[in-house]
Length: 377
Image 1 (cartoon, helix red, strand yellow):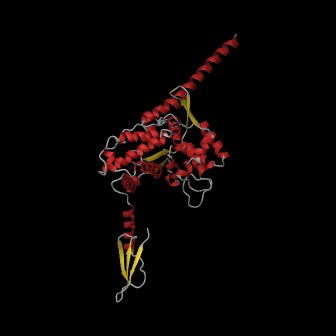
Image 2 (image 1 turned 120 degrees about the vertical axis):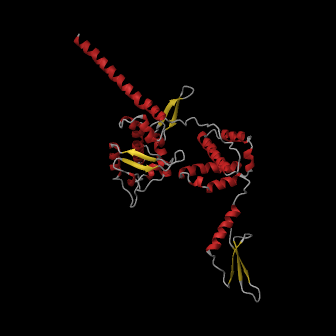
Image 3 (image 1 turned 45 degrees about the horizontal axis):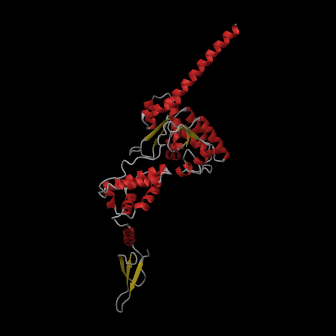
């Protein structure tokens, strides 16, 4: 929209300028002078408001609710990565229902339409589930603002069956395979991030934003960027001997002036969450190394699932249980997990390993006793 200047020059009258926000828009300024006037700060503000009002969607359609949510504190308080992911889903919701009246969302029959939308996206179940989550939060925002009376997206079941990843961790063999693939791809600094994650349990956003100022004498203390149950928890990571050794190594990495983050890329600059965790970086190396978790499917056949960076938190949990010898409750407090989830990791990776080792030692001892008896004869 272009600002419109109208010059009025009538005989015997001073030259007057009328400034409109845009053609057909409101008058924002009037000036009596021979030359075209410069816009005042007040006029600029009025023009911005007028353009925003002109571009605002019809308040009776769903697009207006989407527009209002994006401008609300609830949206701005979301983590950057969440806004990016949810924004993509909001665009899909806009494309599907954006021009439809908000009033239709008060009809319980919309539940069937939401289910149909979810089922149409069954080929990408995780994305379909995120779409339902975003729609539910959008309607929740609308209900709290008095725009809708019910939330038809509540209670929609998930399609993705891989949501429970409590038993998935990165083993030492996985990490070594990752290191080899990273070196071959000339991306060794990605391995730095993997090791740091395994020794701290930090999430991606906190890994790449960790600075030397967060390091204390006995612990790393950092307020998490991602909210958990509506609050930003303070991560307190014990300073173990392996972590101290890694940090000492990371201090030697080439870094640009002014870069204070613990992790840096191959150019010596700080990583972004998207740059480190994107499919072209961490995910690419993981896939080159063929790092997967194999489990038995419903039909008894093996099913492979990619291991994610987030699964490295399980590796850190085993460190707390073994080398630090923490209880399930203490480990759960550090991880911000439930004790039941920690207990599941203990039974899978700690206790079962101890049982196997014990059995092996007993078998060797028994075999050795038999061998000694045979030699004596």
